[in-house]
Length: 229
Image (cartoon, rainbow, N blue to C red; front, side, top):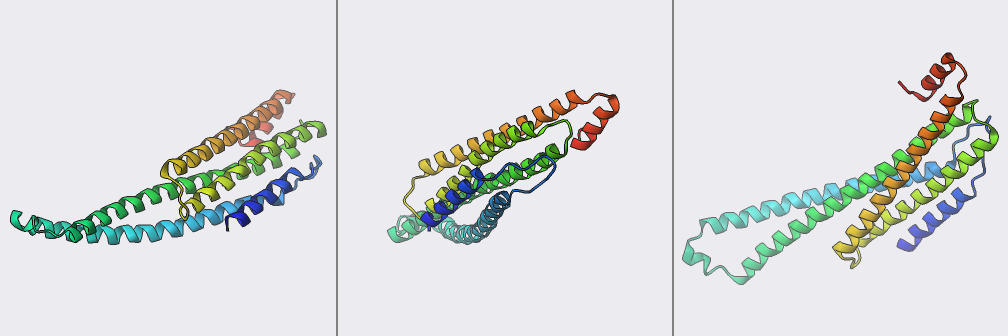
């Protein structure tokens, strides 16, 4: 299962690298990006289902734990000493399982947050790239350069999806919590860096367009075009 997922991600990367540069007069949505968003949305949907199941399990475990605690609270001191080892182990198992389930829910929520940010990154890229292609202040060579920069950022961001799948798969393997946290934190730092690079590059390009505006009316038009107050 994991091998198929990794092969899919590799294919996505190859397709993105080979995506042609679109001419300035033509705005085209890169199909691979829609696939990236679709994958991220499926991850979010799958995680929501897993979280729901785990939350139901949490409720059951909490109820079971309360019943045992109520029994303990009603016992006298001499009766507590007679509490069998089996019952003690049962209480311990409920407690440990509850802690484990809550921990997994926390991991899933972080993965969901990463997937949502991946979608926002792609959406932000598509929005601004479509605008830049229509901006008369940029020539074909500059748009070609922009496309290459964006392709580099997006290629890096695609690696985050592979990391997300790696963490999801880890719940069915013998991966330690420390390693799982390391992968999640690494993916989070990477996608934050990708998103920051994208937004910074967008701001630089918008600023350049504003600097090339020759009249105050042109400046106002550029700001309106990019939704700048």
